[in-house]
Length: 218
Image (cartoon, rainbow, N blue to C red):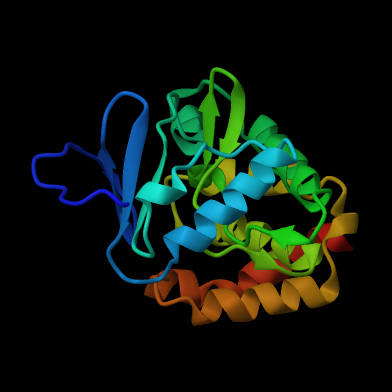
């Protein structure tokens, strides 16, 4: 069926590759500007994860398309916004990320998110909820841990505003580094290097970021 036309809809937010528009108080539409995602595949995966009790937004597959995903409107800050506002501390944020990764990897089918970081976790009144499943696939949980660790390590080295909390969050995430594998970390660095949305500075610090993560593995 689908929803046509975004003219006049209120823009709620924009990311590196997509925009989110308000439909009404209960639903939003995410429009992929760059053609990176498949909204229909993403919606189907999210429905399956919800069926297993994983915290993701509800979706309306019939109203979605490859470039536009209609999903539940969530209320509450992102984890990053909550950190900036002082509503949670960095260590608690890292603990939440670790818990969400372990819960995801317990779902049958070896689903990996591959972009689980503070901007993709909404802290709703019902608890943390994970958004943006555009990069998700079936694969090795060690790679998922490697991707989250690399994102935090890059932020700790390349983003002066969030360097300290990102490092503290990384420390909490890898308090028990047993789920992170050598191959997972190696593959994560390769994927981050090939990501077209990386800034020059983010690419420059990849090597040092990997060394920082290995210090926790040691």
